[in-house]
Amino acid sequence: MKKTPLLVLVGPTAVGKTAFSLHAGNRFPVEIISGDSVQVYKGMDIGSAKATWEERQAVPHHMIDILRPDEPFTVADFQTRAAALIEDIAARGRLPFIVGGTGLYIESVVYDYRFSEAIADEDARAKWNDVADAQGTEALHALLQERDPVSAARIHPNDRKRLVRALEVYDATGRPMSEQAQKREKSSPYELCMIGLTMDRELLYRRIEERVDAMLESGLEGEVHELLRSGYDRSLPSMQAIGYKEMAAYLTGEISYDRAVYLLKRNTRHFAKRQLSWFRAMPQIHWVDVTDTANFITQSDAINDIIATTFPTSDYPFHSPEA
Image 1 (cartoon, rainbow, N blue to C red):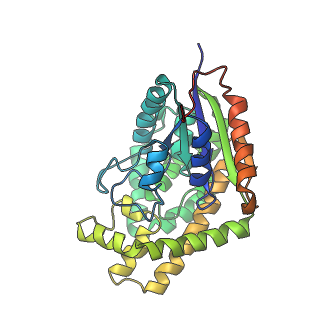
Image 2: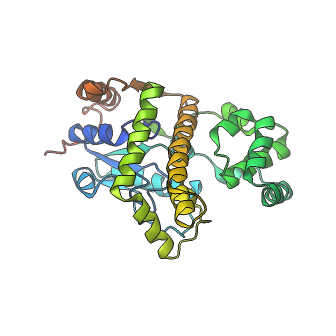
Image 3: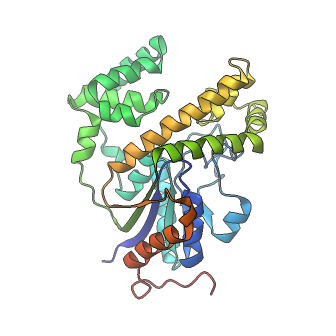
């Protein structure tokens, strides 16, 4: 039985995933599934760098604006919704195309993780949550760094849920979660084409700085103010996202504006570094260096050639978007 085709584009924030995905949409009949954990939320547009309304009209997008910021959404929820979308898109003769930078979300779909089989230790979970309550998530991160430095590098020091989970797995098995993940068979239920974008680190950091400045000019502060005014508490997982957390701290008088901007840029750089570490650990990715930003068309053509090699039109009943 032939596997369902699935195209995936990953890379760190600000590397240019949106532009390259839209260019691919001009050549292939793709429908994009956002692989971003914040873009699912309504009203969180600027800080999550959502594709514009015009871009979404040019190429169909999914998994954007599907929830309120106070509605829970887990990696298992993403996996379920994305898997259904992939089958629906492919059934209509289109090419499912996941684009994003949330590594765990994307990996859960690409390798069809079985969350029901995950190890659970309620006592350990309660213990680590107590530590977080008493000492903060930074203490959890320091403890995880001692036990599982690979997972610690991938998990943000403020991501309490994933820190607790990694420590819980270590308690239950005596082995790092990252080691178990590496031993997990990396087979996919899909006919897979994964492309990763990378660029010179210093250039990426400059682009991050420029992106943050552009977000601020576009009204990030006002966006966060409206979310707070609408009753969305700072403690919500959605409001802990980079950009929202820092601006909320400023708007509630906790820190100065300059400090908020400094933290936003610093935290985004750290996030990009963790993204690269995550994706570098994934097999089967065709890496494309996009450092030379003046050669966008050449780089796009290289990406499109990778796609065409994996999904030749003779093998799949795709039709040109212009048709």
